[in-house]
Image (cartoon, rainbow, N blue to C red; front, side):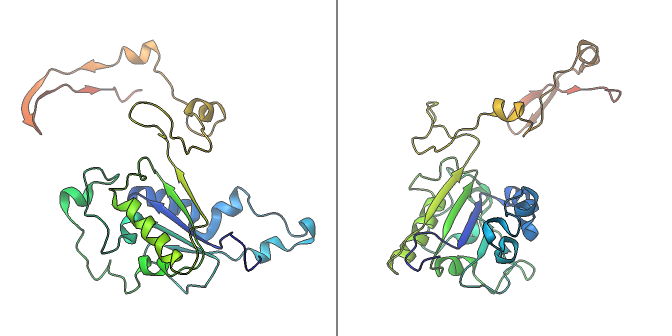
Length: 236
């Protein structure tokens, strides 16, 4: 890579919460997604030693090993990247856990002597991928401000983020219009047709006849005075 190249050799993958992080971890741990797809060309293609040159190192959340200047993939949820200047948790955040319950207490099992946010902000090259990124371009959100802060640290070195890509299943505003910054739209119907996601199946008449309605149960539960329950017979 040329010294003056705008491309980057460090990558930051951000999830909104631990649940999404665990799904990403299943793919990226051990870099298996790159070998499974496969992404890496076979050795000898164009007379290059591709697999030998593919030396990326994955760092998941607080499990940070030796940090090289280049060739790192940082996989984390957004909360690990908050700085002291970021906004307080808001009801508008994708993950409202901290808004309702406050920050999680730090224990001996979760405390890390290495601050991932500091390491990312010290990087000289960086590409950012945001998963479940529905509304992160709202300037009031801590997520937006965290990425802006990372970019500001790069600007102090005369650089900037090489690229930011946002991924979401709902790239639409409240009025139904698609975000103007959308690069590619992959509809669910098309994903079903191409066997990327599971096919929805409607129960047949015989199965529907086995559904039984239970009588209303009158009790207060989170402000609801009645709940109607349905159950499906185990034979289905």
